[in-house]
Length: 183
Image (cartoon, rainbow, N blue to C red; front, side, top):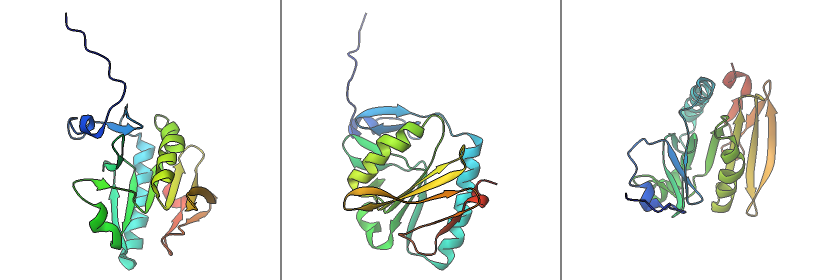
């Protein structure tokens, strides 16, 4: 009988061996599997996409991408944010077969299966690697938090409730009407 040795740490090399579309992220050298998103998650993602498309018509300032899109931060971290934005000036530097380095803005929509990672581990990695603006959408509480990176640390810039609007600091004019995304 062949007994496989249990692997303690995974790297990008291991991650690259996974089948395309496999529901994994590499977080702190650990392969983390996520089930497919709930319907409410996908509805919010769609509603956010509509807001972004309307914003982008007037402000073509960079590249928007949606999950699943790998973002490699280092040899032990390949994450798949729900939505990411890379400024026009940084596109050539970051966009390869996958995104390699910190996007300018990341939006995560919480799900019961991923909330811990989005609020803790992924947030710490985004902060460490210099994601300038991080937005967390909470479908259960129907609110959103916007963090901006100042002197290497995230500071809560705005907390908006369902009837309010979240305003990007990085992208002037990008206003997310929470009533529209939680409809």
